[in-house]
Image (cartoon, rainbow over all chains, first blue to last red; front, side, top):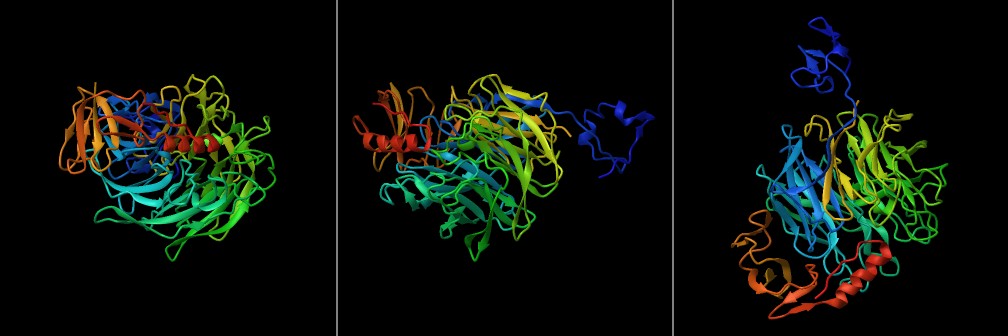
Length: 465
Length: 96
């Protein structure tokens, strides 16, 4: 889009702050002529409690995630409950109060853990998908529901993807890590990636990364599953290997990142396709030339990274898809105590993976800890920018980046946004993988858990551009 | 004293609530916190409400049953927490 408007009523565009309250970045056309402009980065909603029917929820047992329903213009936020199980709320942005109006909490799961909870919105079937690890034996479950305009959800029956220790003696499902669900928006099929108790490497929790493809019956929201298929082979290189996934709309297939590669570890990307109903991995390709960068650790001990661009093992989303340049951006973690984590870009050509090994160092907080330090990534479809955040020991800070297909730019490395001044706030969270441009004037919402109170929190950020 | 929601089939306790919490259990669903929380999985055919119960010290659903007294499945809880420590997941805290 090119700018075709220079003046309005003889006043230069650069001298006009807004028209009827709308800034130029939110006005695409003026009397039929294209208008492009800019808006500065800002915090639209600061560190605020997720609510249920107007009251702050105090429910999170360390883990919150979200997606966006464009049909209802609602955010969907799901979280582990303090007394066991998992719940979700739906919220609409209120521009008058600059906050989100949430509905009543909808129970997803009544009991046990709600670990690694992952979700995505299905625009093909107009459904929300959720997966989690829970039950008494670390079973992995999934559920699909229909969101109504009154902020309620009609869930189908819960599907057991893979039983845990009571099904596979002494083996616990692991590795559903807040970005383990992605919907193929061209078919409505839902991919789930995790470390399957039925595909063991050693011990009770060290398993190979697997995937299943789920299909919803829209008559009752019940789910059927494909065969579980190994996506990458772990081994001595990285105990408890990791895998996270994302949909690629340009190639209408899935992409994943993993650190499972037999006796070595590192950062790998791979394609995942629907092969006659079952997931099929292809073209697993290593990031080269960056031997100090990993996803969760260097393999010398379990997920031992001490710095991360998106929290390592304790982070939320490690990957975004930049729809402007058709590249995935992935966050690294480092374990030597000194190497600054980076963001790296890669392209899925539909027949292979091509890495840009240059990368972009982060300036925001990079602490990693199971006691409250772990950030996430998010992409602004409205501004073609992405964010990541993390804790620097005294505050959780957020940085805004863009990538033009060749070079990265940090837009606020000298003026980071402080989410909260706390040594352990806003971790184990997530963001929407869906375009939420219509939600809050182009701003994006990010969720995380306050470690001390265990409460789910959110922020809404205008990334600028 | 407390009010509990429990599953009829095995006495598994789903929630421990204050005695004055407004709970509405119907044939289709259940709400508590005066409508603030909704569950389509809890209904009169499968669950019941018991009032006048002394709450456990630290409750977490999935490990407690209640008939005329409380029971905590410490074996399952300890197995879970051993696994959680190994992989870096938060422990579950529960105590009679």
